[in-house]
Image 1 (tube, rainbow, N blue to C red):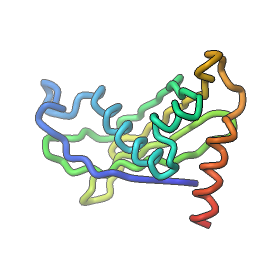
Image 2: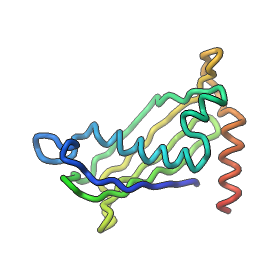
Image 3: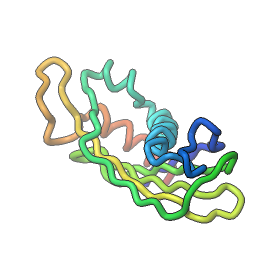
Length: 139
């Protein structure tokens, strides 16, 4: 499948009173990785809207494996694992130095037609073409 990754350093403002990254901040980390992945597809949020579709997140699951601490260097990888009927992206947050898995997650997004506000039961052809273009390049 198609993957992309980004590097992140846990900041002081990300921490909770227990001095570990607050669970809600992982969503921002995944969003950063998702943005890099969507850029690789040339289908980030502005392109989605221009193509006539919005892609709201309808499901998110997170499994916290190990805590992230202040100034810990992370590598967050986003991988497109489903794209024909919905957009499912898996995420893994690794310690950048050791490669240890810290957090796993996935999001599911569905296409909604901007003009009709109807949910699409299949991914729009414009998105499928972009995925196939990248898949052909990486094969």
